[in-house]
Image (cartoon, rainbow, N blue to C red; front, side, top):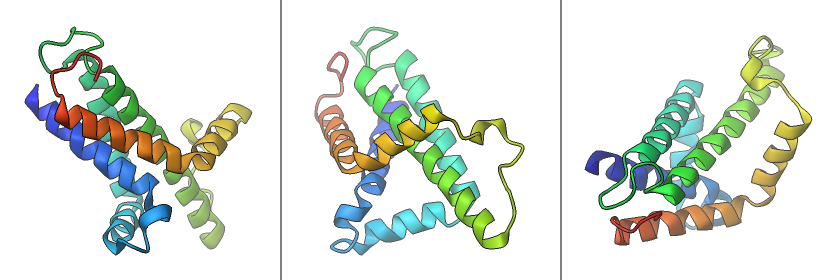
Length: 153
């Protein structure tokens, strides 16, 4: 569907810009303002996370024609899900910052935010390779924009 194609391009570009904000934030202050606007309010960040994840899941099952039905837009869908996971890590760190400042445990009873060794390793991977992941996601969005009917792209 064309609507998911448009949403995919938009969410991939937003995700790439947020991942690359440390690299280009000083040169392009609009990127810094975008990140601050999204993550200044936890509701904004959660809405963006949910929309990105849902678009990624729906992109897998409704690709641009002539792609196969299940995995037609595989790389953009996986990139959207990777961005959604990064948003989850950002929201979790946002919750830690807020609870540290206000002495409250916001995610104390929420099983989605339980710290574990696997989550810590994944989070460390995301933050260590944030710049590379941002460039890859930007590249995927660029090629997906140029070649919308390409299978797996």
